[in-house]
Amino acid sequence: SVAMKTNTETPKILDDYIRLEKTSLRADNTFVFHNTLTQHRSEQVTLEKLRPGILAHIQNLIRHDQTLKTMAKLNTRFVYSYRDRENKPAGELIFIRSEYAPSK
Image (cartoon, rainbow, N blue to C red; front, top):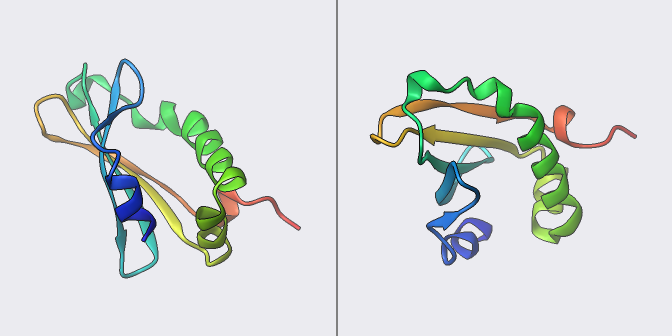
């Protein structure tokens, strides 16, 4: 599965603030990116500010990865779940097909 393939490369530092810990695929057709905010506590972050950048990231992944392209056609939900530097839940951002897929 794409989650297992991705997990062979985790944990992975994505930038100065975010580390991808693992990915998972839920039974309800939801692909989850489990991330850690390495520099912040949950009360210091407003996840909605990350939404535009993450949406662009998802769209780029779908354009360049055939497996994710197929998942997008199957109406997969993409969830970016975050924990803070103290391993406390910091929230999650959910993206549905109408947000990330170009309309036809």
